Length: 307
Image 1 (cartoon, rainbow, N blue to C red):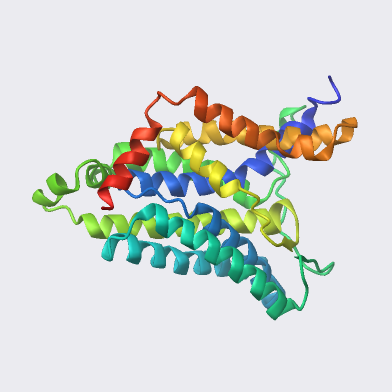
Image 2: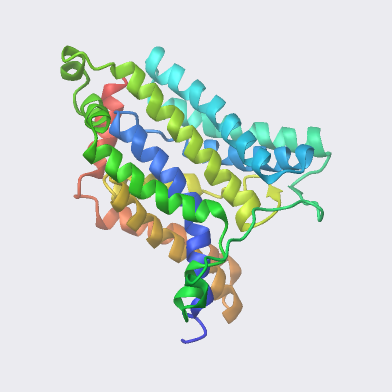
């Protein structure tokens, strides 16, 4: 048992939860303005592939992350234009973007790198690991919290900033009002469409960061469909957290821990396919357990608002 729940398990949890958390925060912003973004999976996948492409051509990690954000932003603009301007059904648009991202990254992998399945380059530089002064010297706690990529710490900071922004600022209250009742918000002079586009674009930024962490932070490679449902897990984390940044962070930690645990269990002679399905089983169980906690109402309201 001590070998199972050791310090490396919790350190891995922080690393693995970051892509889920960043995508879930983006989904929470969209949900707050009345847009149920099912396309998180595709946005993260585009970000992961774009980060590898940017790293390959520039050799600079910062440029790679910025390129990942830019490409995810372009997909977010497409989602926003179809959902807000054309008033298409957000569920259909999100699913279409997921399929588009999967097909586009698979095709681009072969067109750019001339490989199938996966791309790996031993000379490719991943995200740096930061050792936090003083904190790294604290027993157990230093091993868990220190030595992660900058995006891990940035995700924690974003949770705090979003919590303050949504519930402590005037602009945040306007964003909440735009999602709660768009008609009433417009009558007060609030630019609902502008706020919705802003939330969608911010979602693109966060998903771009999530993809960069996935392909340059957790590993230093790209494989076809490497998100493996993390975007959908992030969507569930958004719903379970009631689109509240702190609640979303708690839900994401649960799924990140189960992801890390499933990897650890592979070293205990358990079937690989059994351990790999563990995070998704927990996701379904969480949805069933919290079915009366209000997250389905969010999905219904967002779906009705898109009609």
